[in-house]
Length: 270
Image 1 (spheres, one colour):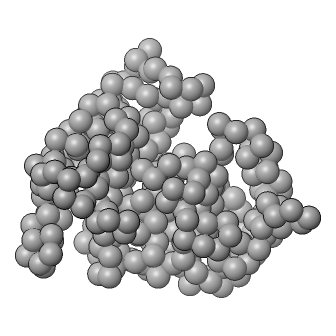
Image 2: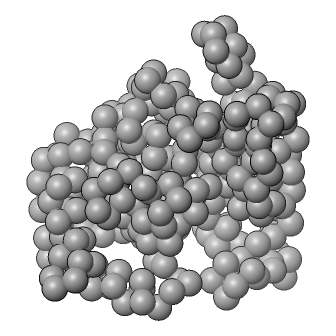
């Protein structure tokens, strides 16, 4: 994937694969039964739809770049033989899906070495395809997108998710939310981290933060935000968000203000 022609071929085929997988998820959503849900943890459901969609994506991506590695939600990690690694969440928002809430997505990113080069987030039910390529911009259904131009937290809409797996994180998170409610336009919890990031990228939301995420939750979405002119960091303002279990993504204008609000709660003595 070193020439424009190779990139064009790859992105066209990858988009077709993601859409095909999305069609499968849509069909299953129409008649899905809650009795078919299994649980990795009390707040972490999984279904045959997650597993089947991941298998479809893995098989297709392996054909596109044979020998690539994988970091997947359901299948774990497969070491790369060619320097490329696919980072895949086949159904981000499984809880929404299993309860009949039509807000969930497919997230696919491609990294070369340690750098994410390509990212797709597909809102399955709205047929919204978000795409970003490193250094080439971010797009929604082929049209360029930019992060919001709002400059103050007090006029901004912020989204988050809840860290179920560690009570200490949840308690801290709730304290941050208490501060944020008084200093922002509002806070939302939509249920798909990948779409939260995509919405920041296209200007529907100004900021997003969350504890306890995995690479497949945010690899594609973080690239979308960056290529749309936004800012992404960990809670120290650094770049250890992909594997660091914490992420702050904003339109750039409110990043320092929101980061300081979070740091006042997480740093000792604050």
